[in-house]
Image (tube, rainbow, N blue to C red; front, top):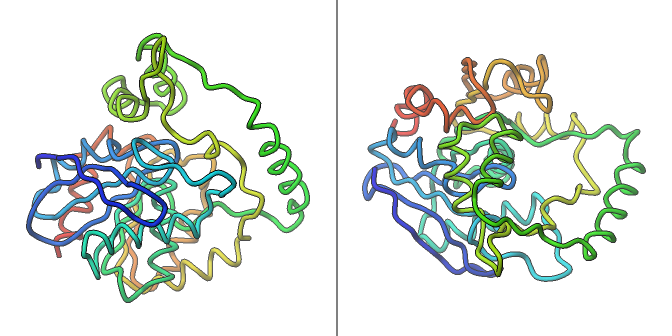
Length: 281
């Protein structure tokens, strides 16, 4: 499908992104942490028959950053995505999420079940949990990092070679996949380029739900759901945690295939074979 730029205005600011298709089921595609809409460029070529809208989430890609003093939280993300759907005129839709985007999509499916028709999550289901015992330490780390951030300066890259290499090394990405994310994830400045994402996105969140709360949210997802994980598992969602969460879905199916965390970019045809018929159903 031919991807084209789009933009909408929502209460927090202008949201940009990519969209494809004019007919078929409506699908909002939510990218991962510090990624952007280009995360779904490889997959879009294999998802004919749907209306695919992939926004740059707030603070990512070319979209607006939150106002000074505001914090990036799951609640902010869920409401922003709902605002995007409202701006598109979509009362109901399906969700496709990768990593952080899959966590946001999971929370949305539980929070607004009357709006989410189908759910596809890749490499995450629910959010990252924290133990009760780590509560004080997490708050100390988060507040210290937030107070130190204003003194940090953005690194300037003379060209795109260095950020492409950085993404390749950090995320086990091919050069082609890394370049897609980098080209949409930087902005020009004097002397070269800097990351366009909001530096506040790198801050640790002071508060996370515990595993029991996340399990209750996953169990509250009533729509048909397809979960896709890569083998070997990533550290944040090891076995048996990821399979245990998937088993909580009232109407879910789990697929595990060989690949890396970015399998939707590196093996899009195979991923599309699993999720395409499901989204078009």
